[in-house]
Image 1 (tube, rainbow, N blue to C red):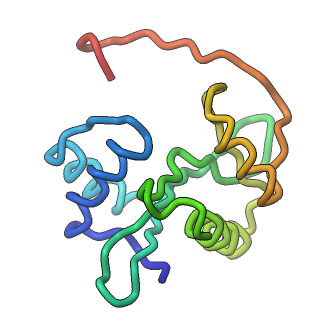
Image 2 (image 1 turned 90 degrees about the vertical axis):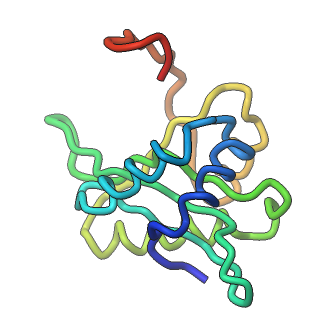
Length: 148
């Protein structure tokens, strides 16, 4: 079942981020970001919960993508599903929910970046209608600290 993410999801989001995406961002930092981003209309956070247990099994996080060279769309920042539940249609349902929100807002596209070694994810995105239109490198300069 699709629903908005909520503060009580922090522990689940932390575990999903760690296990499915490889990001060990502390529960405290996750809680802070969730509280902030949930109030920002340029961010869309959608979860999938198991209907009986109400356990959060996955989520999608997208931000509004606007520039001087394109109309508005969504940029997916994260699509993550509990590893043991992958392959059961949860990611597809989450993307469908995001697509419905994009249509409601009148957006023209949904885009995402995926690291080159995530071949299974690439195949999934192609199966659900996404096409790879660019290969690029990411450049980053850390302003504070030694890690993201």
